[in-house]
Image 1: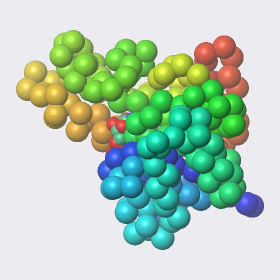
Image 2 (image 1 turned 180 degrees about the vertical axis):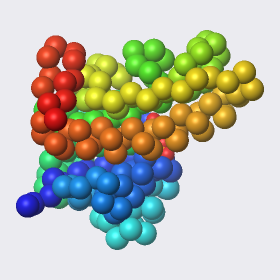
Image 3 (image 1 turned 120 degrees about the vertical axis):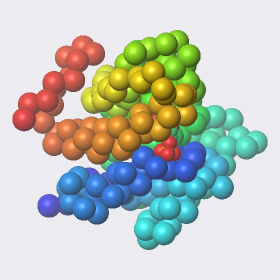
Image 4 (image 1 turned 30 degrees about the vertical axis):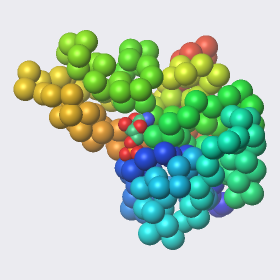
Length: 203
Ligand code: GRF
């Protein structure tokens, strides 16, 4: 059976990418392979982590380009590598409809809050400062609104009195590393329905 080709987009250290790669390597995320890792930043740590694993890893900087020009390059690189499912893993640029329409219902993202609370950047600090008693992460399909698409998986933790914004973010990250492979297992099963905003697993 041929494996579904994943393309990962990241801008940072890439710990979620590593969680996905490790899950593929240990057999807990079967039926897929990472075809390419792309970043808008040449110095993204995640690119080095990908190269250490022998994976194609390319920086495609956006500087001096319009968003659409940049995304056209990203789309071309993903298509050249045969990517069927795009995984945003700490990719820090908002995607335009041009990119989203190139991979309809085939882009997933992880966000470090229980959506729809705390969209945008620094979601963990937003949750901490708001005084939320429960925090967590969300893996969702990407649509044309920021942090908005159909939710696949959420994982929640309780905020502890002794937490700081930093310890809370670190504990949410532990959950992210479980949530992303779990969401990909679900989506790659191909056995799900989407009814309105609801993701329903069939098996
Ligand atoms: C994660 O917190 C993710 O939820 C957010 O960006 C961060 C990326 O971290 N979208 P990493 O690069 O995967 O370690």
